[in-house]
Image 1 (tube, rainbow, N blue to C red):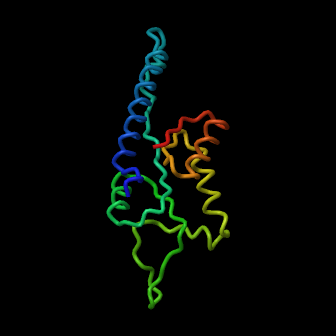
Image 2 (cartoon, rainbow, N blue to C red):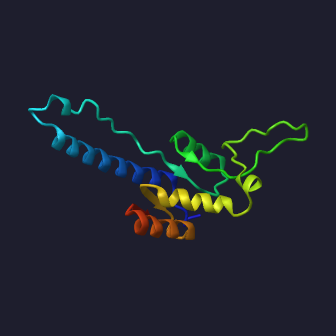
Image 3 (tube, one colour):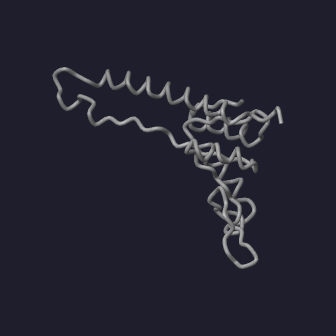
Length: 148
């Protein structure tokens, strides 16, 4: 559908965030480096990429492949599925089985907590979950959010 934001557009926004984070990290590193203090030469500083958590109801294999190839973490609360012989069916994602283990409210509750706690949120402007997580993240933690 046209109303769904493409994964490529989200990846571009993540690249922008990482570029801005690198710039801030390098600027702050320059400020901490002092000519007269050899211990502050910056050799112990490491910039790490933020993990990207994805919550989606996307089912298309080609889209799930993109998420996997980008190294993003897909939160899949579904149950492990077995065939008629009791063998686990292959899945693109690691099934967490959240609802069957903890109850019907836990998948949404866990998603809300994780999305709210993220340093950055890129959400969909037509998603109530994204809107609420965005508002909570800004109000409670001062995090940066963006709705596409």
